[in-house]
Image 1 (cartoon, one colour):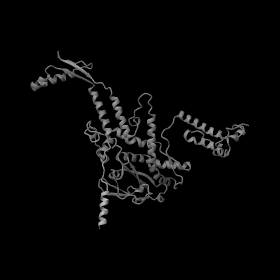
Image 2 (cartoon, rainbow, N blue to C red; image 1 turned 30 degrees about the vertical axis):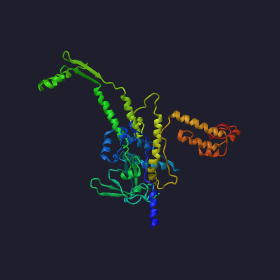
Image 3 (tube, rainbow, N blue to C red; image 1 turned 90 degrees about the horizontal axis):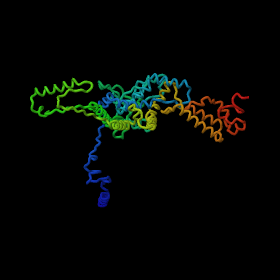
Image 4 (cartoon, rainbow, N blue to C red; image 1 turned 30 degrees about the horizontal axis):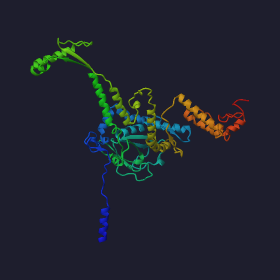
Length: 480
């Protein structure tokens, strides 16, 4: 017993007490830094969870045009160029897929889901397949027959869809760690309409949250407006105050002798007559600013200058745009200002951000839908079925010509150095067709005929450029 007590005492003595580190800047005499009584230290950031305030979010969306732009601009740019199929299928198969998308209004449904996911922090798209009425069962691709995909039913987190408590425990599942089932209820009666398995649900969430905050939001995200709300308040107040100042831009005031005594000591009838006199003077004032006053009274005019207000308003708009992660030119519809301002760098950064969203948010949604759409449109899922997102920026004709010239010269230089054969050079030129629209007419037969032949081989035949452009050796096409 004594040895056991001694070991407990040793462990208790060696256990260190919690230590609070105080390694922040502080100057108590000057009232600067940590722990001092200055205005900065009085700042607090209370946890408000504004995402749960449905009425406020809805009112903001319906009343404020900036909020509508914040919610819609980024999703619209995400789906503007849509996607391209990267699969070795015939063109008629691609046309069948496009007809299925138009018939089910797929792009509009995904756009709507992104809208409400960004506004409320969460929305869901129920995958509808004809013949699979029991939504509580996992989605079975073997039962997706041609023509059975009916599109998506979009529900935001407040319109009757609720995550259940059970979570997906399979690490191989794309929804690992998220709710396994969702219930759809009638909001009026509260009755259960359907239990939906997670494999039939596409999730649209707002900004990502840490785990415990995600649990507090029932595994949805944060509304985009929660992080922008304070900046919106500043902008609306500044704009309203600037508008109110226009009413005070030109103020007339009249000097009247004994005004304070008249208002303090005279009876109500004398005061009433005074006010009637002022009203009459205002009524007979002409468009030229002529006003009749008693002899001895003095009329003054004060004009307000708006110097500096445009700069203040521009800074407020920039804060809103920064919080919304959208350039001012797109969010407010304004052209770039300033000397040599083009907004090109802002748009390049914005398009890089959109490309990241397409890969992280839009691609998982489309990869869930593509097998279902392929089975409904084609009856089979190709092994090489994949998608790619076209670039958002479209170069003009001069930029395309410059790109084509530089890349063509690079290919020619490599070919003339005998580093690649004519067939490889032709393939590289033909690949430029997707970007520039040129060299698409190089045939597969010409590429096969040039296989293994280098620049030196064609040079010996007195026509070194014939191989790279698919012409027969011995001269230009058509020469004797």
